[in-house]
Picture 1: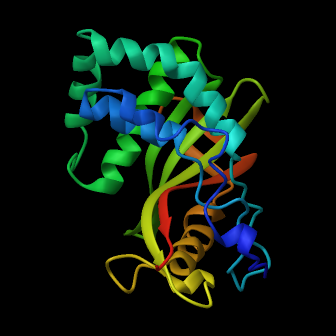
Picture 2 (picture 1 turned 135 degrees about the vertical axis):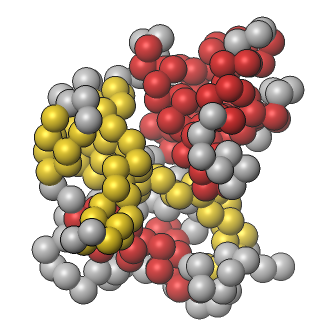
Length: 227
């Protein structure tokens, strides 16, 4: 299992201007700019599963998110300076638990996916979201996003998380911890791999049954080092 510093420390942000989201006035537009411009906190996925039959999981690199932010920049300006801001506000407030950080993060990315695809700013069509997973009659989780990548002609499964973790020596994945001491990087990634990323075929309401071709963990936020 790889645990090199390059994989455990935050992704390189040198290709981005310093905090470009601070240029926006409306809070929700600023949040949307942040979730696009902020890279994944990992540069590679770490495999914590004891099951050898789990699937390969990928992460998007910094260049990917920079390109998405750049392509959407004109639209961000429109949202920030016109009544189009109301579209973003209504969408976010119509979602369940809009004031919870994880749900807010998911709502922002979901808005960008739908809005950007409709405007021809990226190639990702949302096929389904928040698909419930069951073990018999018991709900055991859900799949965040099932997307069709028209550029690569494949169906992708994205699982989302926003985390603000403090690291401690020796900076192994279990040493990156949130406010709740039970919430740490290793536990989150193991859960995503063992539960959410195990699906191969997914039943969608509007597109029937689809087969997952590629899986992405989208974990954003900030990793903090002790002084």
